[in-house]
Amino acid sequence: MDALSIVEDEVRELVRRRGLDPAKQPAAMKSLIDDVLRDYDERALLGAVPALGAIELARQTIYDNVAGFGALQQLLDDPSIEEIWINSPQQIFCARGGQSELTHIRLNSEEVASLVERMLKSSGRRLDLSQPFVDCQLPDGSRLHVVIPDITHEHWAVNIRKFIARASKLEDLVDLGSLTPAAASYLGWAISAGLNIIVTGPTQAGKTTMLNALSAAIGSRERVITIEEIFELNLKLRDVVAMQTRMANLEGTGEITMRRLVKEALRMRPDRIIIGEVREAESLDMLIALNSGVSGLCTLHANSARDAIVKISTLPLLAGPNITSDFTIKTVAACIDLVVHCIRDASGHRFVNEILAVRNRVEAGAIETSTLFDRQQGELLPAAGADWAHAKFDLAGFNVAEHMGRAS
Image (cartoon, rainbow, N blue to C red; front, side, top):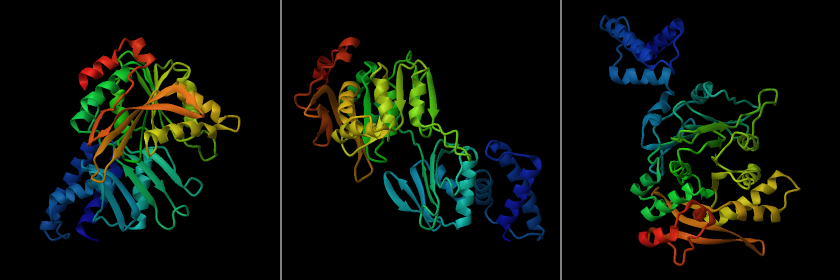
């Protein structure tokens, strides 16, 4: 056994004896590791045990192994890394600046399984043959997703998506080059006036970041209910209740779905409902909620703003055979006001590519839309002939056309 393993075993034994919780008592853990290292170094000088080598490296490695997530901890601690994924114990990747790279880290199958078990420990969620998928939040706010064989061919597939909050409000997105000042101002007015907004785009396009930035423009007197599969939103609001779904237990009962949470949210006196991501039949409940006078925000995976309109009109059909496309199309036209489409380019830069207005009019089964902002020579600018009028702006007392005339 090498020196590092000896010290780590001694630390683990002392943790057990003293009843320490490594995840919740970092200061005590670091003090304990320092004591063990000091004692070991004295024994090594006498030749009783093998020399340890670089003390600082040993201290960090032992802390990561006992209190953190082992070899992955260095990636989790790196603020430039956005996502980590394991295809096999010998293939561990990360994404930095929107670009993927193969890391130097190599594990074995037992180490991967042990790391996942430790990650799941604080979440209350389980992973076994009857439930081969799991989605949960790590203590630092990162999102963990795991799939195990025989759903995967041979190895455990692990994804850790870190939430790196580079922007917390619309002005931050302007500074990052994701929005222009005119578009940020318009979106701020839209939130203040209570427009219902869908944020769309592909995976890793910055939809959650945009949702957080939009939420920062919500008035301080509004009561906001958020609904997510896994907590990812980080709203800095005075009156907010966050809810997430729950998996079924071992007996197959106790599951709490997105649909249930949307219905429960309506009983909580919301001024605004925010749904982290709409994927399935909960879209119907969201539309019904928005049609009852509650303002709302959500994200949706789509390739374009217009594709998002088609998708949000189709998803409610999953709720049951008694739901018709005629009903969903008319409801979407009546409820949804704006679509903000985000993309990520080849260099990894994330930005808003288009802002689309949804009009309360249906012709031949198609919802009328109009482009408010689009990319012109690489810049998000007001579209030619954009119609800024909206009844909610009038009720809120915003003369958006006048403001946009000055902005452009």
